[in-house]
Image 1 (cartoon, one colour):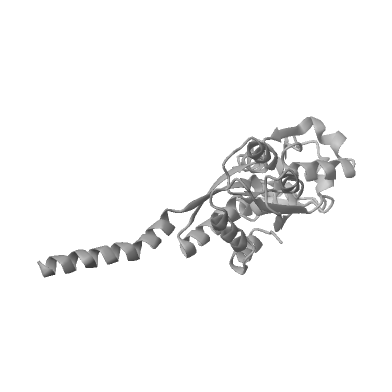
Image 2 (cartoon, rainbow, N blue to C red):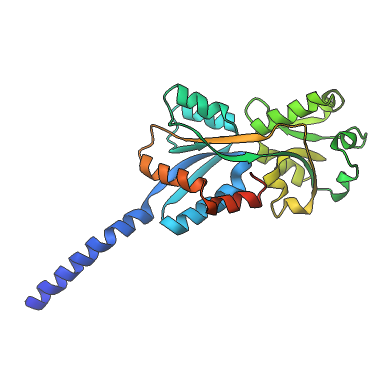
Length: 250
């Protein structure tokens, strides 16, 4: 009888000891992530889960579409935007905590065709008659599309390529179009050009396009604000910075 009691006591203590680790493994947070950040985010989330046991599930889309979802009540814990404007608006209307910059990106003109980058200047390249289609992310909802469009207008190239532009719903779709050669080239994020697939093609840096300052914020409706805060700190940690750098983010 005494042995039975001891056994049950040991089992109970063991169960109590292991409850926190089981709880940690089952905990997860939901993130709304701008489409340009797919590859680095997946690596960062994987590193965070390996370190803490907490899963970070992401929904990737254009910044504008994610912002619309959030304002309509989508249950995200944290929002990683591709601009500073929308997190600032969420702070202003009381939906989010104070935003913070987590990355600075860059627009490039990328093509799956290695010989596409034959000219020294991207503007000269785009004026060639053999270029039939050019992908651009929707400037209304995608900050990378906004920056690319601004560069085209600023340099006076827009009129000559306007009829060739294929509008994609987000920057990830631009790379999809370009990598499948459905278009000759696309205005992509540097992170796509530096991915394993991206290295098979070539790209021009668009110096005329503004740098993309990307801001994030924890949403006040989050049911796991402490977990979201811990992940937010990891986003700007040295470990995360190494991953960002690999994809061209500053």
